[in-house]
Length: 183
Length: 49
Image (spheres, each protein chain N blue to C red):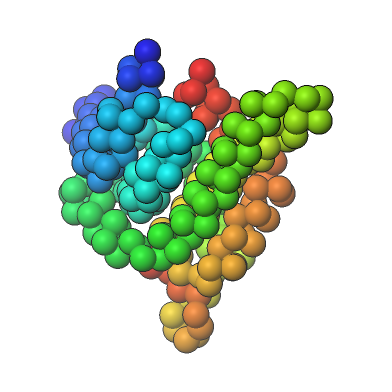
């Protein structure tokens, strides 16, 4: 194969992996999918969203794990994804549950602040929004570390916090990627 | 509107996750170098791959 063919092969391989992994991710998140379709996004449904978000953690971790191996030619994305999903399911849930609990508490608090918008509440609202954004990046680091290596729970949180606060360039890069996606 | 925007996020999730992984790869390497001990040392921290 010449260089052009190699480049094309690599590109099509990435496209193939991304499509298959996306389908698997959606399948693994079918509860969240159903919740998004059927539930009205109000704060009274927060607990149902919370339950629907529980399987998202292992699915995200498996997605991160599989994407790192996307370069390998001989691997099947289905096997890699489900392998990582099954192998890390319990470990990831241990990390994921406290994170989404804090996330939903912050979300409910923000809703409360919005209902009575005094100056103090608006300031707190801003602080909590930033905290949610930081928590999302923190959870990405925690999931990536959990899915690749085996550490104690508190070490995973400490490492995630350490990389969140010390690797500012990478953290702001991740914030920018997520911000662009949401916008 | 809600339907479309939320679903688009789910359908581009692998692409977004791929960009995030590209950006986070050096962190994974750094964890491996600084904090991971191999199984030969019989420690609790091990590499899964």
